[in-house]
Amino acid sequence: MSELEIKSLEERFNQRIANDEKIEPKDWMPEKYRKTHIRQISQHAHSEIVGMLPEGNWITRCPTLRRKVALLAKVQDEGGHGLYLYSAAETLGISREEMFDQLHTGEAKYSSIFNYPTLTWADIGTIGWLVDGAAIMNQVALINTSYGPYGRAMIRICKEESFHQRQGYEIIMTLMNGTDEQKAMAQDSLNRFWWPALMMFGPRDADSPNSEQSMLWKLKRKTNDELRQAFVDQTVPQAELIGLTIPDPQLKWNEERKHYDFGDLDWEEFWQVVHGHGPCNKQRIDARKKAWNEGAWVRDAAMAYAEKSSKREFKQAV
Amino acid sequence: MKNWPLWEVFIRSKNGLEHRHAGSLHASDAKMALENARDVYTRRMEGVSIWVVPSAQITASNPEHNGEMFEPAADKAYRHPTFYILPDELKHM
Figure 1 (tube, each protein chain N blue to C red):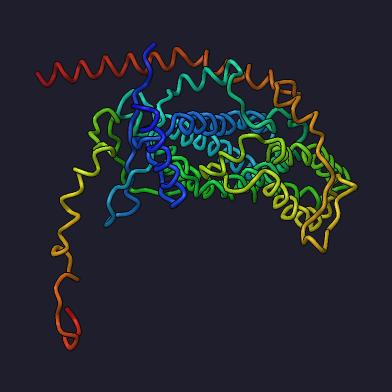
Figure 2: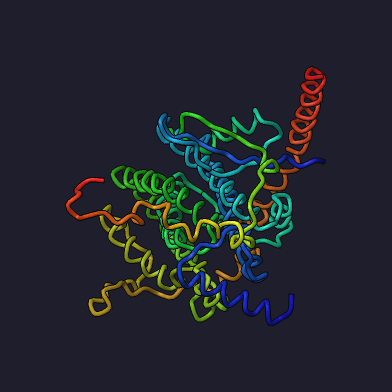
């Protein structure tokens, strides 16, 4: 194809997106659109899968059976969400194995929040409430994204996600109705997770070079700073309702803006964790690699069994 | 090592409705594909029947040929009821 032809195809493509038409897997798309989507969707998938690790840590230590069934169901959902997203990325021509490889070698990123440890039971509550809350905020905005399979995965995920946030908030609420020690545990957890949760929305708009292109492709419907602000506005009253204090001395309602003003994030910490130097980066990837490598014989055995049985069926048919 | 093939999953949400495409998954054989589809796509009673089809078995039309493919339908307005002009007095038809 000549450059001119590609240019006119691209113009038509951008027009389709501007008209709110969806792009489906076999449609022509610019190479950059394909690559950007593979990157974003696979990293979103990795976040779901790695996100199972900090919570899985608490499944055997839940305080009651009710909490345990809920946490098991939540972690199982995260696995399913990973699957929907990996499948969506596969429609763009990358294989599951390539994506796992990128995760295991550190080439692909995942949400930095999962590089923080879950030290107490309260952290399971905080993760559901804040981390899933922030994820919902991001994901609802993505339901109308231009790439069909990604949008469809988002619809499914958002439907399932709201139970996650409610179960988290309920855990924290229960602790806040408990003893002084339980209240302190909930507050300590919020203190540790508040800033990392705000970091989930990514760098400031001014430092987010790809944002403009992503907005054009509707891969982003709201900017990082808009989503972060919406999250703060939504979460502060939820904290106040149960007697928690947001660990930010600069947090204040701004009557003029009709939004909360809040302090600046520790961007140095943000980039440290993104670049692999967070408290648990190594532990998370090691756990993933171990699961993948130790499961290899199971995958091989299942395939060998399937091949053997299909031969047997064939013989019977003859 | 051989990778598990890809399967497309179709779910009937309740009797009386058609199976609809729900998504896809990898599995070593049809039985595993069905069980995984149940675990992933019907955890909240979304279905009463599941079909799994090897993705490689699906023949799809090419959107680049949508012009020739679907053009024959474009100029046949007489296939729609509104093509026929009837008197207003005729209330229901």
